[in-house]
Structures are given as C-alpha cells and as structure tokens.
Length: 240
Ligand SMILES: C[S@@+](CC[C@H](N)C(=O)[O-])C[C@H]1O[C@@H](n2cnc3c(N)ncnc32)[C@H](O)[C@@H]1O
Image 1: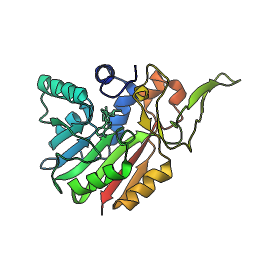
Image 2: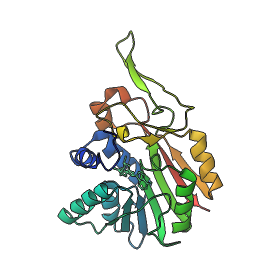
Image 3: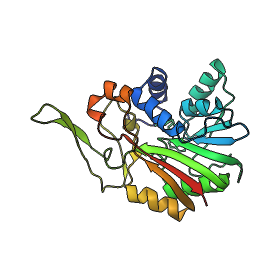
Image 4: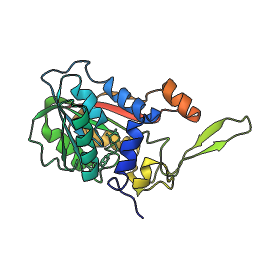
C-alpha cells in the first residue's frame, strides 16, 4: 500500500499524543519564537496535523485557525479540540493556495514540519504572503535539509558511537522513506537549504532568524544518536 498523510493520520495522531520526544521538541522550538501571550493576535497553523501546535498557540490567547490537506488529520484535530477545548478551529485546505483564508487576515503563520510536504514551495510561500498582514511573521520548521536528506541513515563506528551518514543532499525531489515506523513513509519533498532561503527572498520575506535547535534532554534520552545534530531547521521570517 502506498502511504499518504491521510492513510497514516491515525498512526501520526497517536504518535504525537503519546508523547514523541522529537515532535514535542519540534513544537517547543517553534513556540519559543512566538510571544508568551498573544491576545488579539490571529494565527494560521499551516499543515496543522492533529493540531498540537495550534492548540498550544490558542492557549496563549490567540485566535487560531489550523488547516491541513488531510481530511483525516482534520478529524483528529477536531476530536482533540472537542475533548480539551482551546478555541482553535480546524478546516481542510491546501497550503499551496490557502483558498479558505482571506487576504491579509492573519498576523502570524506557523508551519511545523509541513512546508517540506507541499509540492510547490513558491506557491505556498506566495499564499502565506497573501494571507499575512504587512509585517506579519511566518515561523516554520522543516527536517534539517543537510542531515535529513533522502536516504540518510545511521552507522556504528569503531569507537561504538552511532553517526549520521548523509544521503542524497543534492537530489531535490519527492521521496519516500523505507522506514515503516517513520512519518516520511508518507513521502516528503527534499529541498536544499539554499532553495528555502532563495524561495523566501523571492516571495517577499525578510529573514529575522534561522535556528538549528540543539536537541534537548528528552530527545537525547530517546534517541542518543541525535544528541549532537539538529533534527530541524527553523525559519523566522517577516512579510516585507
Ligand atoms: C509532519 S506532519 C506535521 C503536522 C503538525 N504540524 C505537527 O507538527 O505535528 C505534516 C502535515 O502536513 C500536512 N500537509 C501535507 N501537504 C500539505 C498541503 N499541501 N497543505 C496543507 N497541509 C499539508 C500533512 O497532511 C500533515 O498533517
């Protein structure tokens, strides 16, 4: 069976809810770039999945919309919202168009590990630019393009430590991980670091910060081989 985000949505929702150290770390890394309190602020969470970033942002007082192209993910997000209401609202939409979101209607866009899934990065960035107010901020994470390139793997060396073997960094394409227990079995778009940066500049964004968060204790305990590598790259950019 060829997997998609919709077919793995039940598995992904359970993974996130049961406390994945890597996903908690990714969410928290993104949240550190947002103000602690956000009353009156309008936030769009692009590629919200089961909604754990959207709900955390809503808990800071913002009005939050979560959109995702997977109907099953949106079902999970609505179910979670019903059992523990945060005020976030969820709907199906394609991040490449954001057709359900009005022009200049949000102050912030968050996108946790989702822009590496859209088929057309320029279209998605143009859509985000359209829906943000002037000066609005986009904060997003992607798997670190250098260390999470297609077919990267791990190897044990003579001193007993496990090291990353970098894969096909220059192959910018859709690829699917062969790991049956990994999210990227649903496939994702690998892009070079320079591709992200130039696409941001081409679509009218100014870079405020780029971060490569150091894995915290939770990640180091769960996956010690990751302790000295940033699993994600974070972009904090402003709509010019
Ligand atoms: C790794 S999950 C991240 C979900 C959530 N942001 C999180 O951090 O748990 C990637 C999400 O991107 C969504 N996605 C993929 N392509 C998309 C698109 N074109 N538009 C909107 N969402 C998309 C998938 O359905 C999936 O829910």
